[in-house]
Image (cartoon, rainbow, N blue to C red; front, side, top):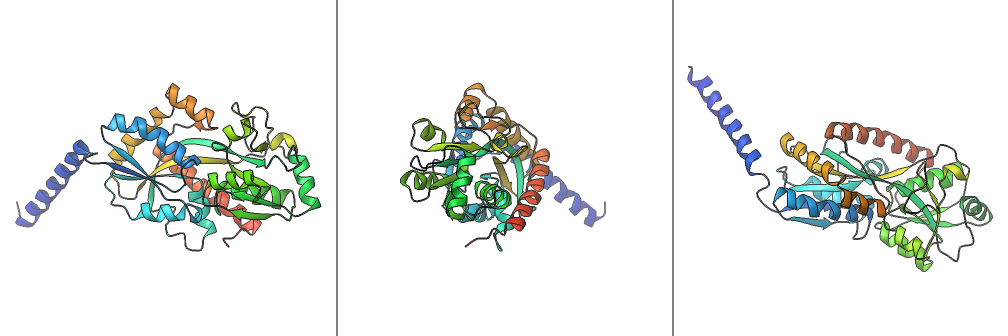
Length: 321
């Protein structure tokens, strides 16, 4: 064999051996899950529910690195710089696709910089108010908004709750309403409780126990059907907007370049975890419906979501202040 081709063959065998070795040894150290959301928010809830079971399955410790702020772009920028060896992952929400169009420089390419692993769960967005706000349902809230200028708080510019407010309250209901962005879902909920803003709009998980305790009042959910965890809260669709639905989804991603065998293993493991009876029950209690799809299906869905929310941003004129 010519020396040149012998050298190429040697390199090829070496690379193949390295790949097999990587498959056998991953994970070889603590896994970090970057979560671009604050403690207590939807991303944090999903990260921690999955982390406990995934750590057991992989036989390796896992830490959650909460990096809230800037519509999720702060945490996403940190995750995109990670070494693509499977030891840094990202758990992010639909803010990943929305912020990509909302920010002039989000700091990442939503099409290329990450590999979608799995859509772990979805939650409808929910409109809620401070108990002192007189509106009891969506019709009354819209009437109140036509009588005086209101504010609504969200989990941040670029979150799907923010864009739900732009779409439903500004575009469809024609309200002159001001958006007040917070760093993540829980600060927006607390601001509504304290009266800093009369209206809040977030994904369901952080609101369920607070609505049940009466600290905030649920107005409408953006799912097609009422949610089992809050059956008393009507849908947007049944309150004058037939067919309306919006969701916040929570998914897991890997930096581009992570080997396919790692992505596939994570997809199988997380997909099995979210449908375990005890996990499914915990997620349902928080307003999540578990999803179990393959990485290719999730990648298609992510691309569709980028297009959908880019259109809403353009039509609403939403911008980052």
